[in-house]
Image (cartoon, rainbow, N blue to C red; front, side, top):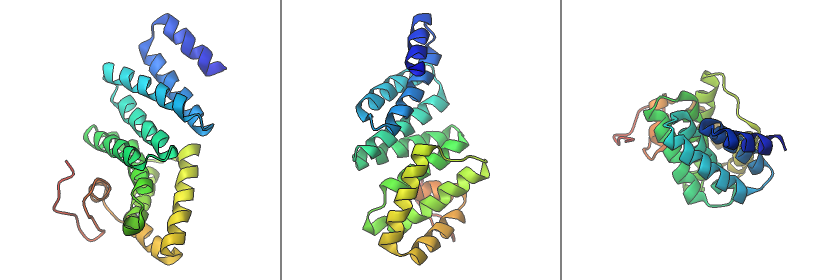
Length: 196
């Protein structure tokens, strides 16, 4: 396997940054194949490396990807915590593309019956944030996003979902972040709560 060989060579060369990148890429493929235990192990090591190297983008990406692993494994509370951490770090470190991904993760994990409208708004806000940067979602995220939207449409009704989605697209970035991290932002204004 090419990534396994690349990982071995990077370890031999002592190139810690490349080891972290290859581990993340390897884990992403494992996620897609349903190999969650090994994906979790590889991402945890990659996250440790990116923290050690103070690679801010790597920390945000690895934290989000660990959230995906937990989401796929059915650990919604852990996934939501990791997505919130990734979003908060992306906000604080001005890593704009990952703000959209963090909102998407939280849209998928905060979608219980009482929070369906909030999730629909977060889906809209995530799309707005990613499209504004010309970002398109990768295969795993796209598949999970589409399945979650179908779940929400079935639960809420198509009209209610579309109304919430449109309201989310109308939020400012800061309003959407507050909504994602716990505040009750709406298109017409923001919450009094500070997102941290």
